[in-house]
Amino acid sequence: MLSVALKDRDYLRFFPPCNEIQLVYRHCRVVFGVSSSPYLLNAFIMHLLENCNSECKEVALKLKSSFYVDNCVTGVFSADEIEIFIEKTKLIMSEGCFNLRIFESNVASKSVDKHSGETFILGIIWDLDNDVLKCCTNFDSLSCEVKITKRLVLSTVQKVFDPIGMLAPSTLLPKLLLQEIWKMKKASDVIKTTQIQSWKYVPGNMNIADLLSRGCSPRQMLNSKWWEGPSWLKENSEYWPDGEISFEPQEVNVERKKTKNANVDLANDAPPLLICNVSDYNKMIRVFAWILKICK
Image 1 (cartoon, rainbow, N blue to C red):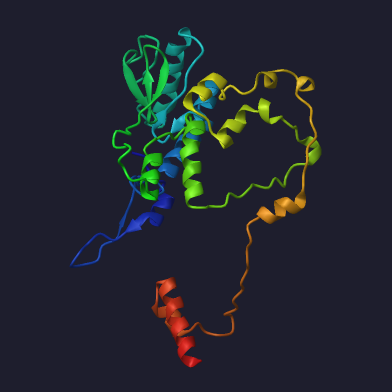
Image 2 (cartoon, one colour):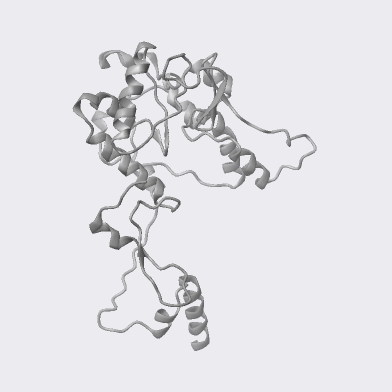
């Protein structure tokens, strides 16, 4: 449990159900189970890591990009580093009263609780013996006799749980199919904060990242090793591929989201009584529409 500072507890007041005298309570601990809980937990962990002992700064830096809610997913480069990493990690988290436990690895070690068999890592199956990641899917209900509907396609797409995006190139294809079904228009992002002169052009046949936008089969994804990036990216920039960059501002402007601003000045006039008595905005609009229709 994370304690809330005394000066902040008044912001966490609540009224418990009571038929007699109305009582007011305050939360003394950080509230979990509400929509803001993941943010609160992440903020506390980041604060803890940023203010840890200087001797553990290197480990803390790795942990900052390794937490997903209350799961920590990271690794080291050799078996000799496992014990040191686990010891420092426990020390850092214990300063915030976090009991980091149940360590799993594909390499046996004194501090590792499980190093064989299969385990789940953020929805992905990890085969510890072969150090292989697998995807858990269940498409048994699909057959030639099943009627294909938008609801079925949507349900099938969402069956693949992949929060870290490991399977993104393969899961993109059914999502694109669903997009075509719904005839949704894909918008493009506009880069405003960079100069064209600083951009680098990468030919499509050399850009592995394009698999994420085009989609591919699982076998193609494994053969491409898209998570490693193109081999030339590890060399000096003078050896990178050259090419012309085309930029048409008019085409980009067409894809921009159209917005309209409306200003209302109520400084001199009191708001209509209806606004004060209706909490549902859509209902208020419908009532006003009927009033205007009757007046006309």
